Length: 328
Image 1 (spheres, rainbow, N blue to C red):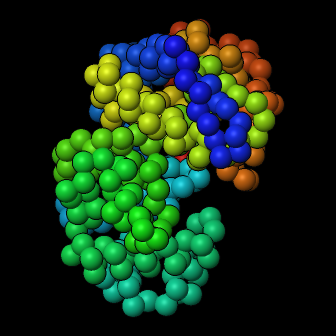
Image 2 (tube, rainbow, N blue to C red):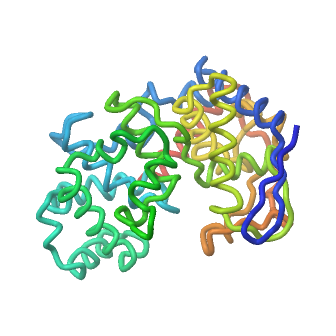
């Protein structure tokens, strides 16, 4: 079964439904069973940045933690998640007022200069977004970010409520980041399921390209042509197959962030739950990072390198060493 996903540039992207179900089932079952890659990298091991990236003396799931995640999620767009959480923890320790109502009266220039000094990407763009989202949180939502999802059963409904009719009360937030925030809060038990909440980031998009879930030609916008259609299709499949979107999101994020980026360097066949479906190597992200687009006609995949590991344990140690070096 195939479905054609149309982009604003009128370049059709074909979505292979059966392939998607097969790839997602293989990844999810391996994740649930803690096999291969997921023996080392798993939510239950505290491996994701939202698990270890919590400021000192802030309790997981506390009101302060919920606010911390609200602002942290805002700045994860096209950024490396581990680095963002480290930076945000540092910002909390240094300038906690950035996460409090007093930031609303702060000059945008001060916000921008602080974000630039800490090392954020595009601080001039982020500063007004930070201030407006702070205004929405503290003035409209009584400082409770859970109210973003209160009374709204779907991501689409949240988008209408906060960004519809010419309004933009949550600048920087779109379906992807709202999905990510919803899953963060659901993981903490703070809210229930939100329909359509599936963050289709760089890693999910790249996996769908290299495993043949989607095909196309030419340069296409990563949001309108790929991410948004994929979010709807993946959410539909999760509902039909009774897959937990949170668990599947974890499975694909760990796969993309910890293994796909090492695909040409480590023994992927020993660790990758979907290697039999993958064309091999890493789809180029150069245009994605620069312009937010994919060149589906010229994926520029890197060939797989030599298989360096002799067993799963050795492969996991090798991969873990590389991941730790990236964090340092």
